[in-house]
Length: 165
Ligand SMILES: [Fe+2]
Image (cartoon, rainbow, N blue to C red; front, side, top):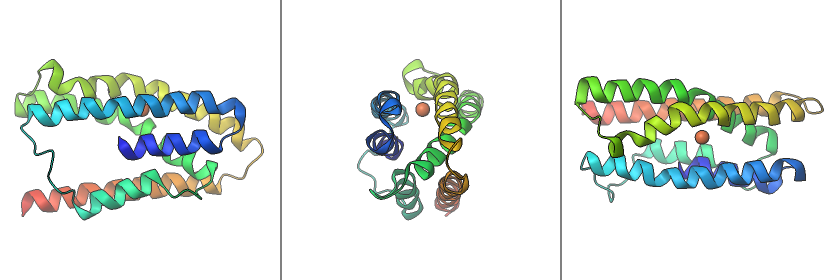
């Protein structure tokens, strides 16, 4: 969430004026979602002070991006993440309830919100991308999306290895 908010904040800072308000609002909303994740972690008695795994740090860096990353790449990152989230969040919500008996509202609100709200976020970014791609080559967008998803797979592999020992 922190990295996604950073990416949205960066996009808002470098976007044409007409896109800035929506991207700034997107960044604000993603920042708010950090607390929802905190509620989930707390419900599972997760350690807030635990050090992130290296692949997690790399994923966060890839999503947040550098100050020099362009708008096409940044929107590509945002779209890759946001468009995948509704199905992922719904699957996690189902799995948490079925396999871990985690269904408490506070514990699962993060997933409930993302199962719905990211449909709208993805739609908004798709619309922003459509405008951008009317006058920009798609390579940057594709590169951003590829980098975001590769880093996410790396993160998941890292978690899997850590869990299996
Ligand atoms: Fe979102």
